[in-house]
Length: 347
Length: 274
Image 1: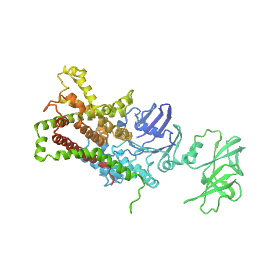
Image 2: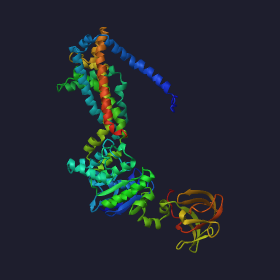
Image 3: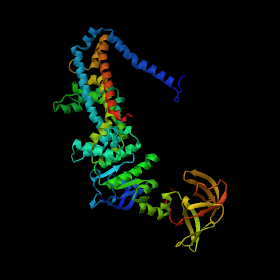
Image 4: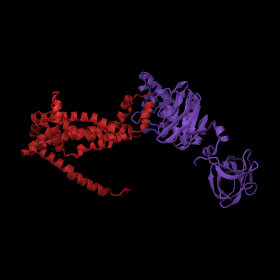
């Protein structure tokens, strides 16, 4: 089922949570709504579900205008951030709930069979008689998904589905959700503030800030062609350095970066730690090492340039470097944004 | 070696509370049981199974049951309204709920009698329909309902407040109607609190005295409650008979509280971790 949002608006008291958001999610697509807290992503998801009504604009499911259809008739599966499992019902009863309250009558045998199927799908066979308090967080998450899928929803909506889990469980569940999505082909929209999660899982990522879409595209598109300094910063660790452009070339220290199309004057240069390297001398930005942090994949250096700007860079694990050492930061890749562009709040 | 404790003050706190419980609770009840026990079984049985005593049990228990059922429905509705809706005067109503606790029960009894007497505001109105409240078991029920109202409201209210709204949203998104969400999700989660409130309300109604004696009419076999009968025996200096009758109330209250505790544990079995 295709979802289409058209100029959707939502305010809470005087706070404009969502400002004219238009978005299309193709049938069978897996899309992430990514943004910092307060960016309106959860509100958008809740409006798609019918848990909030839009103040303006429209929401279509396929060709049906769903804007004013109440949640219970909208045919969505919603997985809540903290799962919202019914604590007094067993896992099996939780999954069966939607079928039991449905207007469409099913026999007990039919319901039991479907519950058993879903338990198998979410790899929880044999746990049907446990109560939610008796299973782990990751298992609860899967029960919540099975419960949402039990009513054959047209679209699946997940609010920070992995937010409350620890890192290893998250990674496994992410891959597993991807598999389930592949298997069922159900249109899925999920909300997250974790860029890694969005990039790892989604076919398409929609990045939000202050209630508006700032960029949407495939993970590759948003990573390689960030539309703004905000997107650049939000998608991962980045250094922002000031530079001066003269005749299409930006200068930072002794480094020169092509800046075609930028007028002469100040410019912001954004550099990922992996876009930088360290050398004892040469073309680059003179800097002093403040601290070296060792990580499994390499070494993260914290340095200060001669102009007093902090810079972080990732270097190969073999690099020999110590604090207080002086040297040069070399630039392999950089992205420029006009300095006067209003950059959003820090993240 | 004694185990070291992190929280200080156990010996002192335990000592003080044990002394308190002994003096205020256990000692009087012990004296009551001791007095009743001094009768010998045949005499004890003759007193507690006398027709007048049995009639008083029936009046007391049935009225308490009626009052509790009324409070169950009305108290639940009151707690629901106070938690779920915001309206002018909400805080005032919230404060009024505790009034039956604060008001001397005799004052409540006199006020209710005045209102429900055949020439009172409510009484004269109800008389049009042939309903008599004052000096009937119905009056006892009214007095019991009044004094025990706060129990159910105050036990259900905090649980209702803490109910995660996402549970209802989840039930809605799964297609549940309002009625089925209430019956299948909300009510079961409130059950332990309701049981606690019901047992307190019923126990209080069994033992209520001050508010009832004014409105009941106190006719033996008709509108005489058990605690009044015990009081009458006391006034006749028949301490043993008074203790015997009171012990019946005591045992009833004990059994009932034990049963509700069991029911509550059953209703909360889903919270037990493996």
